[in-house]
Length: 145
Image 1 (tube, rainbow, N blue to C red):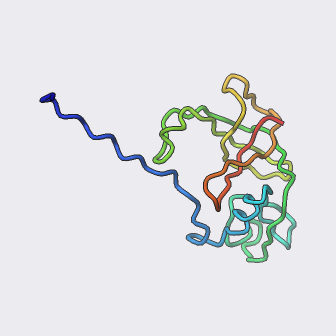
Image 2: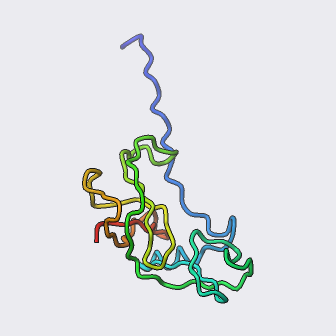
């Protein structure tokens, strides 16, 4: 037996799951994603899309919002290859994070899938795909179109 004590394995932090009611009710977003659909909020008064979800319209501050399905198509606005993971994502590094501009005019911060870092280009067409997080949640990401 060795006199050298073994260091305990670091406790693996599970990947965080969405909490739809903490800030506001984002359940429609997560339910749609679980069905393979991408939805964003629209201001009913102006007809403008907004993302990330908010309790009020960015245009007029009113609560007259609705969720609408969007095309799921867009282009890469910016991206980075992530090597320093935040808790729960340590086993995923490196992974690609991108700011994707949807055809509907909003930008989403997402993971890019099924593409190598060297193949990603600003302006590259992408389409939505979904990553299963749990039995209840699927996370929208994007892949080359």
